[in-house]
Amino acid sequence: FQGQIECDSETVFELAALVLQVTHGDFTSEENAKNDLKKLPVIPTYILREHPSIQYW
Image: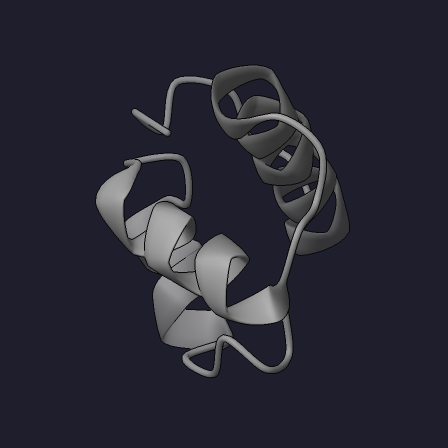
């Protein structure tokens, strides 16, 4: 998330999903996942600019 290693957006989303699972457990609902993603700094800003919609993630 600090931009030290470049990777494509699909990999960023996969890594973010793994971080969510480790920190918050298994998927329970889309709403919880959205709220948790907003709180964790796991998505770099350049990815947010490219894909601003959480629905895309």
